[in-house]
Picture 1 (cartoon, rainbow, N blue to C red):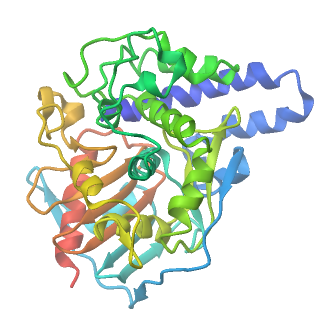
Picture 2 (tube, helix red, strand yellow):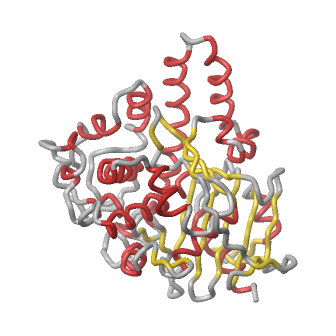
Picture 3 (cartoon, one colour):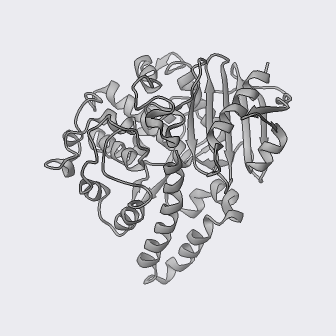
Length: 396
């Protein structure tokens, strides 16, 4: 999981450098460059994550006419705190320490708690960061059910011409979904050059095709954001639609979303690895689709089989603690995180403290968005799991 975190730190720097090269020759772009350089300073994170469509180019994803409305009660008292590694953490202090921008707790379709802290409200669109990967997974599930993608066992070369004749040609789609592709890429050392080359105009798949393989697929789980970029390209090529267009038609207009969403663009195409801006309650509506086994308003948007397969961490490389790697402390399914436990929990996680937590056994959804520069602290993810469990246990 630390690689997921390091990716964004490296990428921000790479984007700034490459953007400078691209924009310095264009006077009207200087202001945009300065804004981009300032966006990820610690003091600007809260603003950045609430205003991404104002800062970056994006594509709109329009909501449908039908809106699903959660019932709402007065805010319930949250659990006083939780235990992690024999230390007690106060809920109030933990939320402050992790720079929580907003948090929403829903049980049985009733909003039990909802608060906004850095100027946002229920209409604010918050950046997904890598939570967006779970949306890409959903779109892949829809594409499979519709026959655009025949099977997740299909080789990448079937859908990505740039991979034909390379070592990546025979890698199964499912290996990318599970972050077990075996592609010879390191987010610490390779992401900077990858970001700069793509920002300079080289198509991402041409860049990725040259990396080759580090090991056979399904050997080892390594969190590589290029896996999700590959999934995004498979979807674009298979459906002949952009990710935003496909999401709008097949998902966003069908789950009762209350607000339009926006997808950040890189060189005119959606950043599949993490670029959505979505309201807090709409994140919960997306989570609710999974909680309800893919069904909304009588329509099976995602198949029950896809939901089940998405949370399957039975393979050795998918399990919590896989390969004795601290980055794999939490299990990983189809672009969803699955913690150790018997309650069927699953999560979407984004850097700087973005979370969707779902507990089917308690019918609880928690969305927590943050602007936390200390998101790389040791135990950060596991500590949040215990926090969410305490909150879920304490909500009646």
